[in-house]
Length: 132
Image: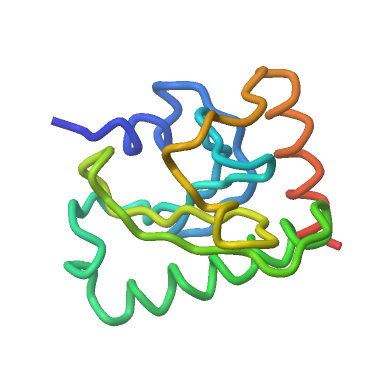
């Protein structure tokens, strides 16, 4: 059975896509910890992040680097935080979000703005920043 993220990648479930390559896919988190919270996933369905091959790990990190650059252009921040938790969906993924302190990555805090029109706008801004 396909994971939620595979269904998103295949267009079976809508998302606010940010960026895509031949092997990776980035989209807005619908329960963002911060504005600009993006999920980066490999297109291959692998449950655990470190079960990805060495080549796949290198590829997803290079892809995430491009997405992080776009996030930084749209959201002035000290850095883009990265988190690999992997308990929410059985599909390897990375959380990227603009941060200025460690508290900015607190997944237990109230969620950020998740209005569809806002997420669509942010996805577009980050995508344009990546391409610039």
